[in-house]
Image (cartoon, rainbow, N blue to C red):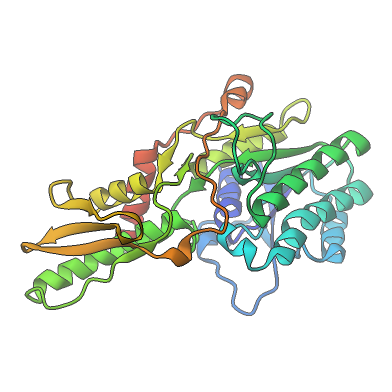
Length: 353
């Protein structure tokens, strides 16, 4: 039986990876690494935490002793690293912690493999933020690395470490460059989930507003740059691509992306549409920091979305658009969920929650 060590299992990507592996025909024993915490949130693990082929283990990417012990004791055939400080906006507030987890943490994993299980196959989760100030679109694997955040820099550095260990120590190590990937397990601090949860809340508040004879209040959703464009996919589609990368004959880095780009403004409009708001009832008004997305409720215009400058990044990445054609052509991977279906899926989940 193959043994797989997965980090970040309490988060979106790690949890989706475990669910995918447990769905495979081949029997796989999975070890899900989590940090010791007074109040861990197991909500993303409800579908598998009691599965006989899954076991929680304790470890921390900031602690080389714990990583060494896990690799030495488990002797994993695969080591899939999704643990990270992954919220870009916060990386300016705690850059040292971000670099320690996202870069030195990857180095600790690679060192543990080198010392205790050199035939283990390692996956490092990269990010489109590595490119930052882009030169051209779509971005391919050869695009210059020009990050604009501590987070992007941490992932770019990890990418170089993977290459060094692959070439210097003959370790099967790959770095998957993941463009934006979302879903119902996404943390509420991320803009997409902030939007869908905000839309669901506003929908409920408007219903209460109407039931009260238009006396109750509706609190608008506050966001930053609405014109930033991202290449969004469903996280559940990406984990299949990760597994394909780990099972090639020879290690090679790939991009995972939808090959489409959409603005945050488009995401907002589609999310409200999915919640039952219609174009005839909503419109954008104002310019710049005064711009608002409003809705006509009972012949009165109610603000749904407003701009808050505190949500602007110190250095913005305006356009991300991936070129995942190589993995599509060489490994047969492609995303199954469209942008529209992804947004509708997330909104429905938050409306039902």
